[in-house]
Length: 126
Image 1 (cartoon, helix red, strand yellow):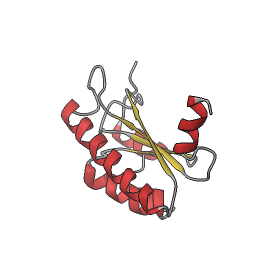
Image 2: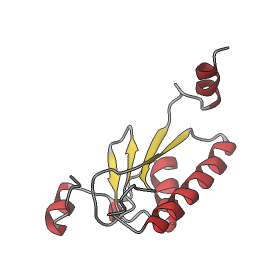
Image 3: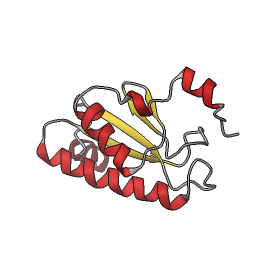
Image 4: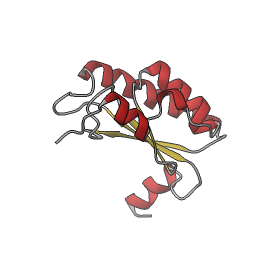
């Protein structure tokens, strides 16, 4: 079997699930301190591996260099739901993991919405 097919099979690509992208380890840290982004990433990576071992849901994670919302980071986005989150500390990521990724309920307290962006004057990275 070709290496990319083996990798896809191991990752269970093609199954129903959710994928979270987390802004961490940026080239130029803007949304949060680099250490905070890396701590969030390490936590998310470990917890998703633990949850995937249980086999109840299929979750994927990707570390993004920058998601272009350069405030209140780390920033995350969940697909296929297209829900964006701010302030993704390990504690917030645990809530996103339990409530949204596993439970299917958006964590509104940390959701980035149009009203949040307008009221807090968020900036977009150039």
